[in-house]
Image (cartoon, rainbow, N blue to C red; front, side):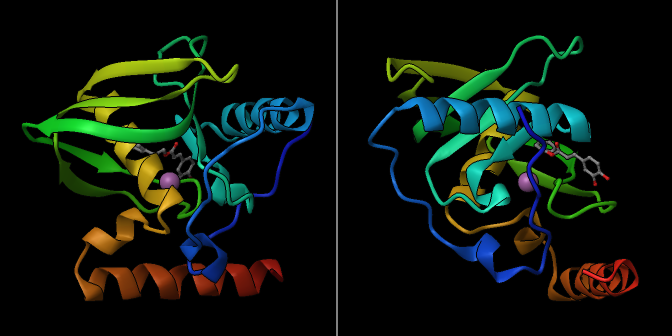
Length: 168
Ligand code: QAP
Ligand code: CO
């Protein structure tokens, strides 16, 4: 298993549209395990393949307290959404910035599990928010896109400064 490098805003590769997964082979299983390890290692609750520069429609999530309930979803599609839920979101690709975002609070999503079996998940509140946030990544969208241009620019400037200091 390995820890993967996470792309950070404003990296343009975070804007790529991911392609559907169509073969579930051993290298894909390794990628899923590495994404889970990377998410747990970073203290995250969700990670999309786009964030590790793999442009496939694949995401991993674990919103459990005990960090013992990994969820892998491939080719996700939201089939219904309603209600509203506000949460102070963060993102492993936007370190140290957290902002309140309102999204539908109840969704139904279908997709494939890591073995290619069809699954349907009904999600509320935090899980619903997390699934929508991760699907946004697969479409090249970031939570900062929901903020005002001024707030987004401040975050961009802060991260560019951090990256310069880190020599990235
Ligand atoms: C997306 O985000 C999410 O800035 C997952 O320094 C967030 O796991 C979905 C993290 C909130 C729903 C609600 C962020 C870790 C983790 C940071 C994350 C940081 C360290 C973010
Ligand atoms: Co994110």
